Amino acid sequence: MGIGMFGMGSRMSMIGVSGDSVRTGAIFVYKLTVDSGGAPCVHGGLLSLAICKPRIRVAAQVGDWILGFGARSVEELRGRLIYVARVNAVIEGREYYGSRAYVGRPDCIYSHDGADYAYREGSRFHGPDDLDHDLGPAPLHERARVLLSREFVYFARKRGPSLAAIEDIYAELPRDFIRRHDQDVRERLEEFILRVFTESPLGAHGRPTHDRLRSRCARSEHGLELPEVVR
Image (cartoon, rainbow, N blue to C red; front, side, top):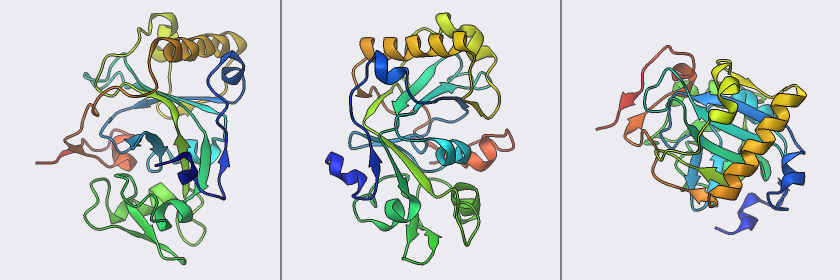
């Protein structure tokens, strides 16, 4: 999968991780209750956020940063950085779900026939009832937006860096996400991101923490349903 997979119509940025690049762009910070390989999805050296977290997917732009921490309520995720990624491309759902280039990715759970979306039967993640949550209701499907990154570190089930320097920030994270930070918090997050990329190689460092789980983020994000184990 070359970088060209981002698509001719995508907006793309690949200038490398540096102090200057970290100081530009918004920093989205949120908590994951499930790390099953669906959101984020890392496949073929490309990280995608195509399902779950629709408000982040709608708001994020090329050059922004995403920090995904484990929720304190989930023992195996508590106190961990799951991943950090710089958004290199933003593409519309009709391109992601309608192109043969992406059809083999685990999170490509919908199809687009040129007119509308449909759930791909047999997909590992979610189900037909999650289409409106992931993509937004018809006819606009305003949430059908996919974030792509090749500048990422995905720790998955591996213990990542210590959160000691940002423990108070982590402790106060809301249930959804945050992207507006005061100057002190912003600078500390920038330093944290730089440290991660300085100390850790790019790419995936292991398999997803919950790689045998089937989860519906529409429910699990809000504590309404526990993940369903895939046997």
